[in-house]
Each structure stands twice: as C-alpha cells, then as structure tokens.
Length: 221
Ligand SMILES: Nc1nc2c(c(=O)[nH]1)N[C@H]1C(S)=C(S)[C@@H](COP(=O)(O)O)O[C@H]1N2
Ligand SMILES: [Mo]
Image (cartoon, rainbow, N blue to C red; front, top):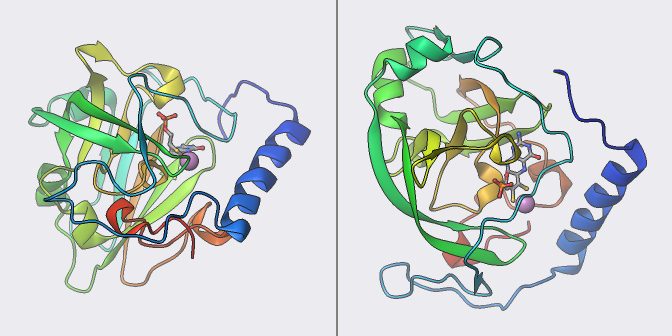
C-alpha cells in the first residue's frame, strides 16, 4: 500500500462493519425496479447537488511522479502508462450522473478522460477475457464484467467540471462507470486486470451485489 493519510484502524473497521450491516439488513431497499430510459433517478435514490466523499478512509497521495496505470492480464498488449503517456491518449469529454448505494445521486457531472474503449483498443483483450478487476492504491478492489467496462460512457477520468479531480475523489485518475453504483468506480486506480474468470472485490465479498445495477436495485446480494 502507498503512503496514506492514516485513519485509526478502529474507525476504518467500524465503517466497514456499518456498511456490511446495511447489506445484511437490506437497508434502503424499496423492492422496486425502474427502466433507465423512463426514469432518470433509480429506485430508492435521492438527488443531491454536491459530491459526497466515500472510501475506506485511506486517501493516497498519488503525485504525478508516482502515477502509473497498468492494463494487464488477459490482454495481447499489456500497458504500463505514466501520467504523460496516459494524458497522450485520446481525451474525451462526457456528461453523466452518479448513483451511490448510500442513496445519493447527482446529475450532469462533466468529465474529461480516456475512454475505456480507447484503452481496450490498445491493450486488446484476449479471446476469453470476460471480467475486469480494478486495483487501487489504497488496496481497494472492485470487479465488473468486460461488457460493463467496454461501454461508451465508461472512462478513466482526471477532470470533473473543468477542475482536476481532487485527491479525496480519487485523483489524479479514477474509474467512472456511471450506469453502476459508484462503488464499482475505483478511485486512485493503479491496475486494470482482465481475466477469464470473475473475482469479487472489496465490497462484493462483504455483502454487496456483484452486478450493481441501480435501476434493478442491485445493492446487496
Ligand atoms: N480506491 C477506492 N475506490 C473506491 C472506494 C475506496 O474505498 N477506495 N470506495 C468506493 C465507494 S464505496 C464509493 S461509494 C465511491 C465513492 O466515490 P467518491 O468518494 O468520489 O464519491 O468510491 C468507490 N471507489
Ligand atoms: Mo459506497
């Protein structure tokens, strides 16, 4: 693990226990689903104007010198990019909403970054690569299917509303998968691992849903 802001281990454990408790109790579940084409706000969510911070309490300081992003595993051309190489990739602007399992959603965030598809076009997934594991500098991991990552609205973002993404939100570069609950979007991303088989990540092994579709209310499972 990298140099961190040290959060007392007890506080971190309490936070993890609380969120595991939510999963056990099915907290916030409305028992309904919605069609994203018909309803912008997923079931059980509440619209906020700000961008709350949620993580394990360890917020690594990834300086430009320390930045590195690897794309490896089941790919034909593994990538290992420093910040200059990352910024030299095609840069795309996008606008999307965020939906956090703790119930807040916010709308119309403006992003700039490298699209997942541009990254995958360079790394070239091997036939049989069906899953993606994100590894972050704070030790966090999360998993999605390759088809969930290989989507036009998925980015590795460095800019939010015309400002560099601050450290507390995973800067300099984080993952953004707007159609899934936000725990699937790794902050301080270090490595993107493609695999033939799935491997549940930090919250997925602690009661949170593997698929995480907000409109299907896949909070826990
Ligand atoms: N590296 C890392 N990424 C992470 C987390 C984390 O603890 N570490 N927490 C996840 C969770 S549970 C949420 S809800 C979102 C919150 O992102 P935000 O703090 O930018 O709102 O980040 C996700 N990505
Ligand atoms: Mo979360």
